[in-house]
Amino acid sequence: MDSFFYGIEDLFVNVLFAPFDALRAMENWWGANTLNWIFMLIGATAFVYWMLQLKKYNDSGEENKEVSAHSYL
Image (cartoon, rainbow, N blue to C red):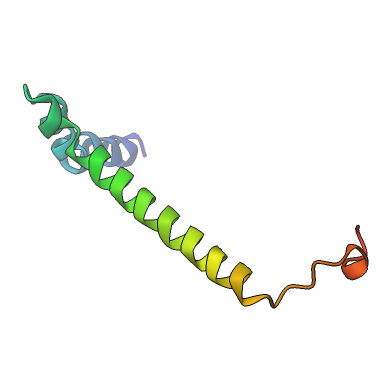
């Protein structure tokens, strides 16, 4: 049973995480952080999209904003 778990360890450490080790060993800071920049761009794009959708919903005036509109108020 130990060899099964050592096989899983070998798969992840030596095969699946090899691209991350290559990025970590790069001399160029911008190149090493390319994946981080991609994730930040995706997050910023999603944030802007979500804020635009909230503004569109708020501008449509569908929500009842009276004090007695919700039971928890």
